[in-house]
Image (cartoon, rainbow over all chains, first blue to last red; front, side, top):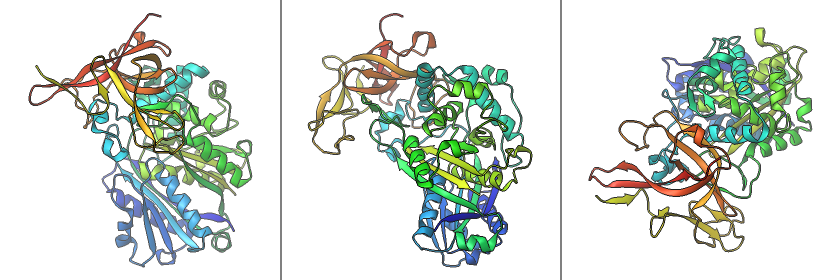
Length: 379
Length: 138
């Protein structure tokens, strides 16, 4: 048995007057409409939100049908976690049709997580170390030093994100910026400048998933979930909010999650026609290209400089503009990636359609305090 | 003027600044801050272990915007350096740096532990935290 996506819905990302929950209801309604099913046919739901309330409260708008609805809160990998649970529910026989939804609404500015939520002493936050931005800056600082990643390459990743976002009506940032403008913007946390970062924002995404047999009755274009896998960090990884690291170094949970996903799907990175990779900032996209197996450490310099990760390149990456152009509503981001890959595999991505009728696509999210979830979708 | 540490059980200043880590008696792995279990072998036989006060810079950045709460720095924000310092054979520790000048920071630079004032409490006491200061030259 396998699981397919038969409906997708999105509330645009950015800044809006609606609450997070209201945006979630819009996304679910659009996904149901896209799938041609009604809410009372949905047997279970998994909903993710980090900062905008409990998603199961949406049932008061959508209908009190008595379905099984579980809230998911798993850092930046919340969306990836929700779809993991949804697929497992169908494989376990818990239902034939389910909804996976994620939304969020964050105040402007950097996230300010509380140390106690991450089992850290208050001193860690009081002394100014409790910032996700510092982690991402220091990870790419060391990686760039060891593997020869230039400032120009970091800027080109952001330039591509804004160029792709300009082709996406649901994106937050739709104005292209040049490499020079990105490099000349204020330094936020060395070596990353202002326009190399994503910003906390708002948005919602929902998917209708079902058993393959049901999918074929509902649509002529089901998108098959080849595999989805979630992993947490192992000893030796380098993670957000780490006062100390072991001297013995290991791999990130992104390496483990990607490897497990490809293995379960019976394919490899070379079989993917496009990929959505967590681009919290430009350095993250660069490093995640290698961590997920698409290239060796250091090869990103040539891949990016040669335009291989642009739409039309050998491996288009973050074709919807990624987190950099869409912002980061934590509960929704992982599902935004899946939404984009469904559009691309259906051939419905409009001006940003990857040429050559893509057949297989990959998603990857990464979040604090060291979790990653990946998917392989095929048509 | 009085002073006090920002937290108990993280560092000492007597007779010289040192950080308190935990060492697993079973597999020897050193973990900072000290915790009850060993993240490598999962056993719970962790004992106090004082870290050496010097190492080399493993990575770094500059915090250039004022963090939100719970940060308690000076009323007027001053950018500060943040880094990881590798204490050879022990572990890699994150901490404030005493400089925010990128020209003074490079991976591999020798660093030494020191204590700095994080903020001044309501009673006028200096609240101290640990930081790493560059030593040696390029």
